[in-house]
Image (tube, rainbow, N blue to C red; front, side, top):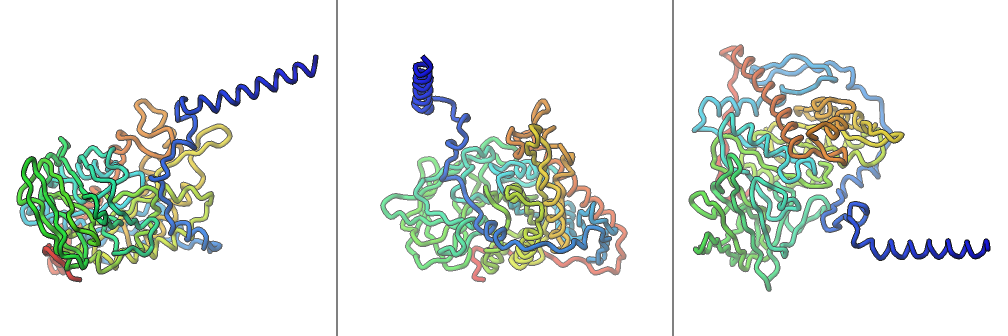
Length: 480
């Protein structure tokens, strides 16, 4: 009888296992997270892996208790700061001055911000609201620079972005030596499918400050193919434009006026490096979103300085924001000396690429991990924010401690569990409500610095040297 029960039980287990395997495909996929990952959209930051592999023991931190005293810049001197509360407004003076000039004379000046980030800014999250805050105060129309393809195009609400699937893409996340230098967006695209046309289509949505595609302009690089063309299709009309890849960075206007939508077909354009399109009205403030899932920030060190300077000659950046950390938290360490060291080199390289442009470091946000069945702030968050503050100070960059701004210890749990929620159940990423809140906090800190700058500017001695004119001449082609 015992043997009979054993075989019956064994048979039930086998039948249950077979039923489970047979019905697994029909069950909700969220029960099987390991099966829901689209491998085509998973990118690994190869430079981060290299930096972790080369990690060396840390030395004693000498900055934590340091009093930070600044050198006067153009007659302006912000008060000394403690490392704990470091914001580095002193190093954002050139950016603040451009905002001041724009505020005084809106028709003769404009300001541009490049916002580099990881999945926290995916789909224009955070950046779209920061852009709207600045454009509300200072004016400006347009979403800025948009890549040829994007893994988050379908989820972006600020512009409708569609493209053919035959574009050849190289990303600075996993390609160290691209066929042609990366664009300012960290990518380079090629229309090398001679059998099928590569195309891209944009449509303006009803987003505030982006209801039209203002001054639609293609950016592309240097190549030996001078037969390439772009067919610009607007409604039933088609206009053919020739590509002239003679400079490091070249531009081609799709239309002399703003458009609601258009499609661009690339004809015989193989081997010509294509970067993306820019949409802005040339006034007020423009903010470009250069987000990339899986990015640690280190791939920026692969930028070609000459190409970046050529981009800057056309776009004219006044502030570069580096918002990273989410992917750096996933390596089970509390010693981020290796990241501090690597990012210090990366930021200094960025300064070579964009001479004189202010840089702002935004730290990791709070992230929660389960400890003894309870969600708590991940033990690596605070050490990482300290490391990010260190390389911000060492590279003379401004700093935003996003962890403390959102509430510090345990804040992500609150953002997830409050009603309505401001963050997702992964206890890492913000939803649209939270992203808007974060953008507001960023803008508030930057605006506080700007208001302090204006107050100091008023007290500046009349004999002090005035800031140099940083107006950028934006030519059609730059042969840097």
